[in-house]
Length: 299
Image 1: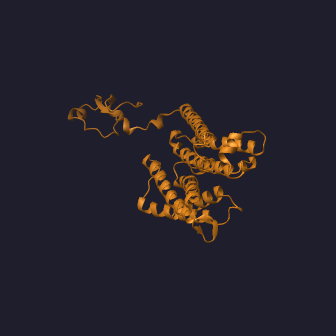
Image 2: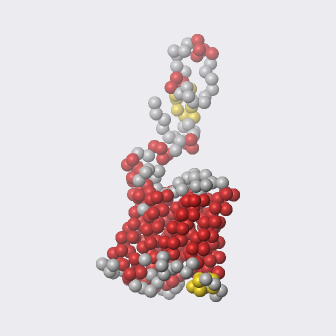
Image 3: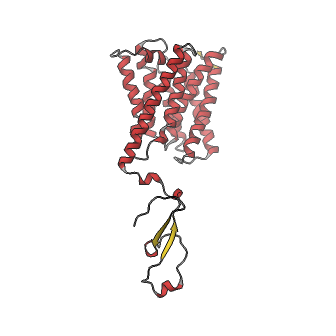
């Protein structure tokens, strides 16, 4: 016997002998006198008690993941094109455009994960977007093709080889977090939140208000570091709340807030160190966040 997912007001006629495991009212006394006589009872099946994902066929899951992938790819292209247009019209500066793309693209990518199905391959479909951008960056970074708008929107000095550094590391981290951690773990979410939200905002605030420099690194400011810690913490909490509300994991918020504060502090400290010439922030910040979060959230 099979049940179909129907609205709560839909009634199904079910044989009592087939559903003796369901919590229904007890049968009448006549049933015990004539046990071979089946009694038809009416059972109401609420829609909310049955997960629609459980009834998705493999083909339906693939269709959903393909659609979500196309949506993410299209959204990413539209985002970059919009900021290119704003930059070309001199509405915003090139550096601000680059940083806003840095902040928004990563956070929107993670926020799109619930669009994918519950199938095993969903995380790999999600990683198609950053891996596609990875291939694009390699092709243009090696000057195998030319895309002036891409170079202008994501590089500091307008050199193609810059695409093979920070921007490439950025999309690789996004793919890593999707494939390895996915949406049922807070670890990958924290890494993207600190890399996109925290580090991105730190650069914007630091350039505008960073007159007071950090003693051990004159290229970094107190304003930038404080903003990275603050925004990184807030974005991280917001992202965790978003996924926990959707039911991907459960968190004790009093403990989680302390852990996120520690993760934000460590990531901010790493970002402030004078090591940018040795290792890019798009590697050091997310990887240190991953390591710290792995330790704290396994306790």
